[in-house]
Image (cartoon, rainbow, N blue to C red; front, top):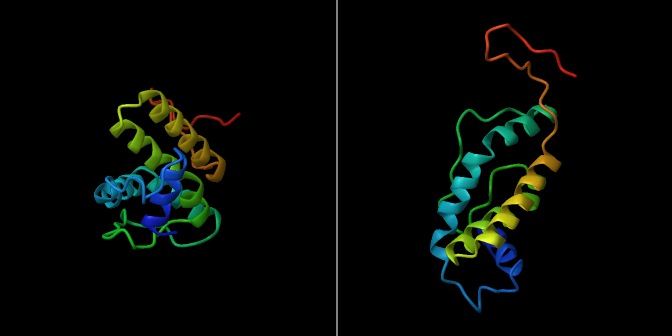
Length: 131
C-alpha cells in the first residue's frame, strides 16, 4: 500500500474524496512517518512471528507515492484509521478523532500477535509469571 492509497481510504471514511478536498495531502508523508514510529514495535512482533528479520531502525517514507515498508495487514487495517483520526483532529472534530483512533487501536491489536517476551516486575522482584 502506498501513502496515497492510505490517504484516499482515510478520506473516504468521512465520505470525502481527494477531488473534493485535497488540502491535507502535504501532511500525509509526515503523518505516515509518525505512524511508522508508533507501530514500530508491533511491526517487529509480526516479523518475529513470521520468522522474518526484525528492523533495527524506524524506516521513513519520503513521498506520497512511496510504498509503506511494513506488514501489509498491519498497514491496510490500521493506517487509514490513524490518518482519519489526524484529519478529524485538524477539522476540530474531537469526537470522530477519538473514534477513529479507537478503531486504529483495535486494528493494531487485532493484527499484532501476543509477544511472549518475559515481563519484568518494575518493583525489582524479577520476571513476572504469565497467567
